[in-house]
Image (spheres, rainbow, N blue to C red):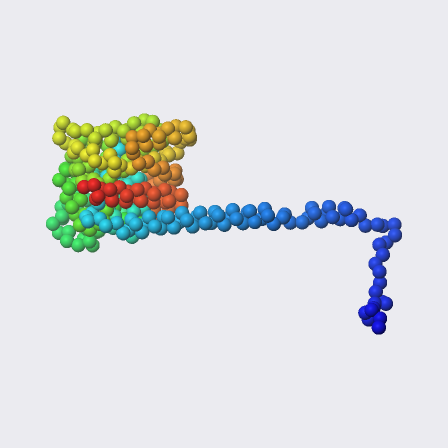
Length: 332
C-alpha cells in the first residue's frame, strides 16, 4: 500500500522566480515596522487606567461615606455658623453662599443663610431670585411665623435647597436683640444657620452673631496682608473686650476653618505655601478652594453653575464644618 495520499502526484513545488530572489530580511524589517506595540506596554496602560478608575471610585466612596455621616449627624439642636473677617472684600458673602450650597446639597436642604450685618449687605444681590420682602419684614411679623412655609416666604430658595434671608431695602442697623430674634426664628425651622457678617466687629449685631456661633469660617485671599487680618480676627475673639460689647469666645479657636481662595491674580507658589504654613502653625484648620469665574464680583451665585473642581472643594468645606459642629456638641 502506497504511503502517498491521493493527489500527491499533483502537488506542485513553489519555486522562487529566478533573477528576483525575495529579500526576506527586508520583508521582516518592514513587517516589524508595522507590527502593533508588544502587549506588555499595553497591559501597563490598561493597568494604569484601571488604577485611575479605582482611585476615582475610592475617592467617590469616601465622599459618599462623609456625606452620609454628615446627614446622620445627631445634632440635638440647630447649629450656627458665622462667616467673618474684619477685612473688607475678603469674600465673606461668596463663602457664605457656597458653604450653604454645599451643606444643603449634602443634607437635602435644612440650611438657612441670613444677614447678620449692622447695615445692608450684598447677600440678596448675590443670591438666586428676586426678593420682595426680607429680614426687616420678618422681624416685624415675628409673632405670626408659626410654620415653615411662613418663614420661607421671607427668603429666597436656592437651587441647592438652601434658603437666603437678607434686606430688600435700606433699614436701621440691627441690634443684638434683632440678630437673636432672627436666629430663634430660623433655628426652629432649619438644621443649620449661617450668618453673613460685615466688617464692623464692634457692632452689636456682630457681637450677637459671635455669641451664638458654634463654628467660625474665615475667608481670606492668598496674601500676607489678608492672613494678617485673619490672625487679628482670631486674636480679637480670643481676648476679653473691656467694653463688654464683644463676647469672649476662645473656645471657637479650635472650631475655626480658614478658607483660602485665589483672587484671580497670579500666585507665587512659595508665598501660597507660606501662607498656609503660617495658619496651620496657629493650629487652624485650612482648606483651599480654586478660583472660579462664576464667583466673580457682582454675579449671582448658583451652586449648580460652579465648576466641578469648585463644588468638590466647597463640599470639603461643608464636611469640615460638619466635623467642627460635632466637636461643638461633644465639648459643650
